Image 1 (cartoon, rainbow, N blue to C red):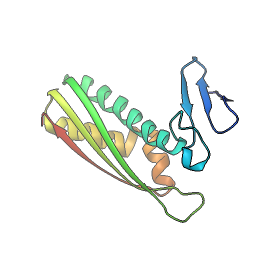
Image 2: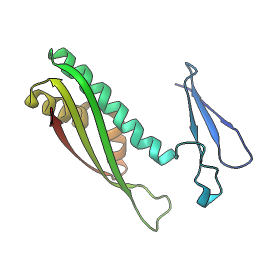
Image 3: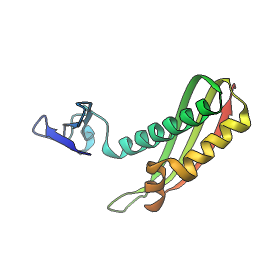
Image 4: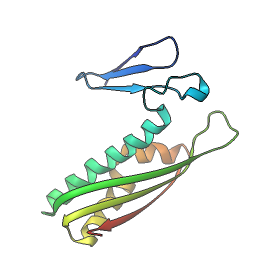
Length: 139
């Protein structure tokens, strides 16, 4: 896997591209000298966590013949204060699924993703983040 990163201004605005040409913009906030033209790298970690677990969960539910009509994830995180580096301390995830889905199967799919399959969640846990989650189906 290869990622290319290119600076786009004289501050902190960068574009990252993967091998397939998909790109994402990153920047620092105006309070730290950036121009707020992209996602902060630490926010991107939480986005990666959501994407990683979402792919796992949809894959598992499809294998179980569950019909996912809509799927949203809310992620809240708190970082360590007064430390460099300032790592994620706590992360709370709310998985919100709608469709022809048995709640027990959704809960099992989420648990499998979070405890076994999602590489991002494991990486964050190894770094010390306490990750908690809840699952809502058709609410």
